[in-house]
Image (cartoon, rainbow, N blue to C red; front, side, top):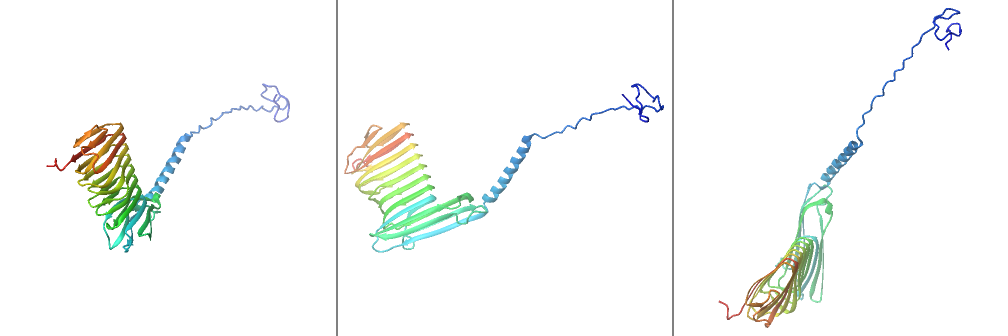
Length: 353
């Protein structure tokens, strides 16, 4: 109920004037307008996250470019040698490399029994070293033999791009050689001539191997050429063998190739095993007179293809018409998935044109 604003008298609800003092009753109209709150438009959360991720990627690209961008050229060379000494007639060499193309060359350089030349080219980023590889070389002499161990190791691999390492091994062909070469990534090439080889082991994980045993090469021990991924080729071009020796030519994923020529009787007998797990085996042979051969072949998936002259038997077992001869090649060819391709010829003096 309202009251007079002047004298305080109680008034009727509908009174317009105070009945005591005559003061007009104030009429008040209260209007409350509720203002609508402004609608806030928020960006979706994923747009903010995307912006952060893009910024992180751009910064990473910029940092990586700074680190790996080929700025500094690599031009590395190191040589090591072993001088020739009288009374030493055998060289034992063991070379292990992370990555390198290795060439074994029968040549005497500057009067040395062994001359090793390692070179590397490529480029490095801002934090890379201008010397991205380390070469170690140790040698000692005992019992008329020179023993050398060497290694090639990569340094700061993360900051090096387009690195190409080459190792040239020059060996005096007049010294008896016991050679082991292993490289993780790279090719191995050897062209032996006028040399006695006691043992030969060439191995690569990812790469190819090509070994040529030419005329006047005499093998007195076993030969092994193996690769995990790549091809292996062994060329036997009139080489000789003393005693009973074994030749292994193996590729896990790739092709195993053997090409063999021998016109004269061997000073021993040779067993050859050539095989591939996933890949083909190619075998070519030409023999004459007192050299005989037996060839056994096996495969799981694939085919055995034969071209022959002067041989008889089946695809799985071939023998030259003079087998067994005074000296013989006993050959085993095998593959799991691939073909065995054989092209062999035996000719006696009587049948030669």
